[in-house]
Structures are given as structure tokens and as C-alpha cells.
Image (tube, rainbow, N blue to C red; front, side, top):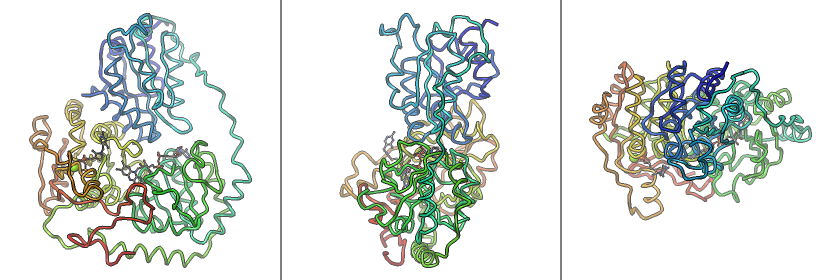
Length: 570
Ligand SMILES: Cc1cc2nc3c(=O)[nH]c(=O)nc-3n(C[C@H](O)[C@H](O)[C@H](O)COP(=O)(O)OP(=O)(O)OC[C@H]3O[C@@H](n4cnc5c(N)ncnc54)[C@H](O)[C@@H]3O)c2cc1C
Ligand SMILES: Cc1ncc(C[n+]2csc(CCOP(=O)(O)OP(=O)(O)O)c2C)c(N)n1
Ligand SMILES: [Mg+2]
């Protein structure tokens, strides 16, 4: 059967099980849009192509499947760049499809011609220009394999207009991916495995560093068994949150710059760190020269390039986290580690009394309270999509996630503007989920145009703006390191509730702590999307904080005044 390249693209996407495409049309991709109209695919019209990529990313992160975004050539394609980079840094599987000028015009600076494969070369796992209809089906199949296999990441397929328009025979079964033969995995190195087992069974103060790779691998069950086999304590990276239940006594919480103080101290005191699917980001390690000096290290990691990249390790188990953990499991022996358990309890107890949640109500509305109340009201079962900044860190600290893929956040690139569109994508992926956006007043203003997408698609996403009148995280750095010179961080914002109304969305404003719970409850009961503008304390800071480049144990702790977080400094 002869079809146009555009029709082949749509049919190929259907064959691959794609249901939703987030995109924005334009001249160079118009043949595809024409074919889309005749297909079963649901196209979601976004308001900015950056939004399309974040939606596809949110979709991918909510399910583990591949998210698809589409744009026209030139400015459509360049608007995707931030979203592609966001996905790349967090190993999220995307396929981005862009229209390109006709193949005969390539290189002539034609209208809206841009070398998008050149531009995205360093921020894609793979990218390719397709100039013939005959190559479309195979290339799209290859794109899906590359995006989702091994260490996932974004793939961009740029299709010239003539390739979309010309007709050719479509034979799905014949369009087999032509990828280099998969390197046969030699299996995990036996010597490394033996060394890891010996380290695990002889450690007196072991600690697991659990990362995003556990979720990518779908290794939650194997991880759970591994942890229980050795009664190991677990700490998580920001992107690892959810891979092990927060309410489990073995879960100590987040590590790193804004991690729990007891976790960072435990890392510095441990004699063995077991890193699983995490990449020792600098937000996690602090100064590498002083990082976990007393600990031997085991690294379970699929990407060989990550081994010894930042932190030299004693045993490298290169492979899929689930497979590696399953191989280790039968060899794990339970050991009596009472002194280590006592030490952890001691450190934890000290910090627990510092908790802002335990303090008497001062009448102030703190972001941490809003997020903690959101956690309680949603029983920890919501899919929370955060933006970037202080609210993101408070979410990580005060919303306790028990299930994987329930915190969706931009970690590596730290992209403001991510939350609202990513939440829309997550809602399409999980229509029955209670999806909440937790976003700052700054980041919300970067992609708030996507409120119109929510209305047009008639979906329900609740939005909690943590409105502190500042680019809060930057203000915090200015407070700590620039002598409170608040240059370019005080932020004027519209009346967000009125703005929501203008879009056709219910808007609320909360200024008192007593109204937080009832407003969240009402928003959840409402059939339509609700935006809540939480006017929180303007100059609160996220504690603890490891200053950039400082040692992990050198944390700035919450001062005793106005808020006391602790009984005594450790
Ligand atoms: C304002 C701000 C503050 C931050 N503060 C903190 C903080 O305090 N603490 C913190 O932890 N983070 C923090 N971050 C996030 C931080 O920048 C990193 O994004 C995060 O630490 C990365 O976590 P990760 O290594 O688990 O995930 P990723 O960066 O996604 O890395 C995942 C790793 O798993 C590997 N992998 C993938 N698939 C598999 C598989 N199947 N099997 C095995 N391995 C696999 C990958 O190759 C990769 O190495 C902050 C970010 C921002 C924006
Ligand atoms: C696109 C982008 N620009 C700039 C930054 C730097 N940055 C990190 S956090 C932050 C402030 C965020 O302010 P807001 O959205 O109000 O959240 P808050 O920190 O106040 O919770 C800025 C500007 C960024 N991460 N992303
Ligand atoms: Mg703010």
C-alpha cells in the first residue's frame, strides 16, 4: 500500500503504541498535521514548544514509556531545546519530531531553516535528519529503541517536507531497525561481584545511595529484597525519591545539598556506600576531596561512562540495576550492626526535634507547612510535579513519597517552567491520578500559558503556587553568600487567582495556615482544575544547606531565630 511519508509517520507511531503527541504546527510539519487529523492519535495543542517537550517528558516520567513531542522547523524546533536538554540530563526517554525545509533547500538558509540536529547534538542521545519517505518507518522504530533502551534519553528525528509529502510503499514488518548489533553483555565481572559481596558482608557501617536508575530499571522489588536481606539503611537522591517507601524505618531520606542532616553525616561516617543507579551529581557529593573518606564504594550503574567519573569506586557492577541486585541477593548475609543503628538513631533524633513542623503555630504561613499539609490531605498518593527552587526542595523534604514515579521534577538541568507542562503530560499518562503542580511564583510565570492547554483539553490538574514574592532559591544564595543584596530577585507577579479565572480555571488565595487544608480538600473535590495561590513567608530559606563546593558535613543549619530547627548543633 502506498502512503505519504506523513501518513507513514502516523501509522508507525500507532504501531509503536503511541496514543498522545504534544505539539505545535507550522509550515514545515503541515503534511504530518494533515495526516494526524486522519489518524487515531490524540494531538495535544500546546501553547509553546518548550511546553510540548516538558509534557512529553512528564508523560515519560509518570509511566516509564516514551513521550512524543512535535514541532515545526526553525523557531518551533529551537523552542524545544530546553525541554530536550532537561530530558537528557535526567535520562528521560523522549522522541521529538521536527519538520524541516525541503531536502533541496537544505543549507540555503531557507525560510525557517535551522540545523536542529547540529544544535541538539550534545543534548540528544541520538538525532537524525530524514530526507526520504522510505526511511521514515525504520527511523522512527530506531528512535523508540534508542530512547528507551540502556540509559534512556531524548532522540530527535528531523523530517524534510518532501519526505513527508512523497509517497512510497509502507511495510511495517520490513521496516526493521538497523542498529549496531547490541554489544553482548559479558555478564557482570565475576571478580567485581565477589569483591562487592565481600564488602557488603563485612561492612560495619553500610549505607545505600538509591537513585533514579532503580526506577528506570523497574528494580523496586529486587531493591526492596536486597535492602531487607542486609537490613541496610537507604538514602535517596532527589530523583531516587519514591523508589523505596518513605515510611519504611530503613529509609533515612534525601542526601545532598538540601538533604537531611543525618543522612549527610551518615555518608561521611559510613564505611561502605552502595550507589545504585545514581551518578554522584555535585549536588549530592559536595566537595569531592572530603566526600565519604572512610567509605569503600560499590557502584551499580548501567552506563560505564559513569564509573569513576566523579567518585572512584572499589567495585563497579556495570549492568541493569535489577539484574545486578538479583545476582547479589542470594549472597547477602544479615549482620549485627547495632552500634551503627544506634548512631543513626542518635543523629536522626537530634534533627527530628529541629523540625519546623513540630514548632508551635506562629501565625505565619510557611511553605513547608503547605507541602506537609498537601502530603497529609492526599495521603501521600498524589503525583506531585514540581518546578525548580526552594519549593522543590521543601517538596522533597516534606512530601513523603511511598511509590515510584510519584515525584516528577527536573534535577540535572533544574529547568524553571518545567512543572506545569510536565504535570499535563503526567495527567495524560495517568488519567486517574491525583496530579498536583507545586511551583514557585517565578517558574510558574515561565510557562503559565499552558493553563490554556489544560482548559482546551478539559483535564484536571491542581496547581499549588508557593508564592514568596521572590526568586526564592536565588534570594537564599544572596542572603547567605552576597550579604543580602537582593539584586533581581524580588518578583512582581499577577494576581494568580484572577489570572486563573481569566483562563477559565478556578482560582483561590490562601494567606493563613488554618485555611490550607480546607482549600486543598475543596480543590480535590472539584471536578475541574483549581489553582491555589499560597502566599507564604517571603524570606524563609531551605535548611540544611551544603554551600556549593563545601564538604557534605559542613551544612548551614536553620538558625534559632526566628525558627528553631534543632536542640543542638551536631
Ligand atoms: C535546586 C536544586 C537542588 C538540588 N539539590 C539536590 C539535593 O540536595 N540532593 C539530591 O540528591 N539532588 C539534588 N538535586 C538534583 C541533582 O542535581 C541531580 O539531578 C540528582 O542528584 C540526580 O539523581 P540521580 O543520580 O539519582 O539520577 P540521574 O541523574 O537521572 O542518574 C541516574 C543514573 O542511573 C543510571 N541508570 C539508568 N538506568 C539504569 C539502569 N537500568 N540500571 C542501573 N543504572 C541505571 C544512569 O546511567 C545514571 O547514571 C537538586 C536539583 C536542583 C535543581
Ligand atoms: C530557566 C531557569 N532560569 C534560571 C534558573 C535559576 N534559578 C534557580 S531557582 C530560581 C528561583 C526560582 O524562583 P521561584 O520559581 O519563585 O521558586 P522559589 O525558589 O521561590 O520557590 C532561579 C532563578 C533556573 N533554574 N532555570
Ligand atoms: Mg518564589
